[in-house]
Length: 193
Image (cartoon, rainbow, N blue to C red; front, side, top):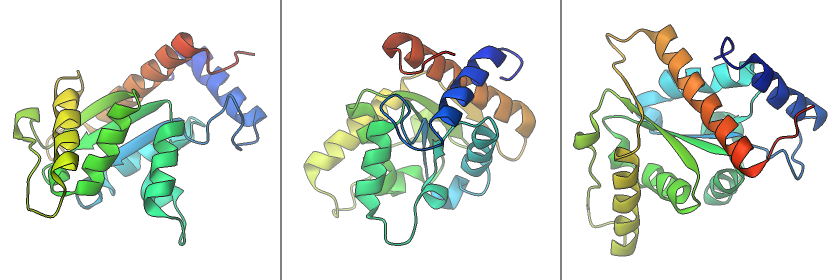
């Protein structure tokens, strides 16, 4: 990504630097919300993407890196989703086993965020909301709608065993940056210096 949009990355980074890394009206505390199933992707796809975006001086939200002991789980996550510009949904084989993942995805979709789907070791057709009886029916319906919307959004696919990690990371970063630029242009959220 750095090769294609160096001026835009610099502009985004300058805006973050001017804000001192602290939230301001035009600089949300989170640029990119990374929605993922930790057991499948925290130590590889989601974690690497988080660190790569941080290296570009963006502010991604990854629960294990962005939350502290004592934070109220849903309050912190819902606030990050409301304030982010772009979401990345990293779908994996065990993703739909987690109502936390599905809650985050439904919040991203309900708030109208641009979402970049990443299908990691799973095909979109394999993703289904499971009803184990522990979740209210209205939530299951929200989760199904959000999952269907994400499945029909152009995304990236990646095979963690046979895939080219550097190429994947570059493609995912390109997609995130492109979506940040589109949001910037659409809503004028970043001041270009």
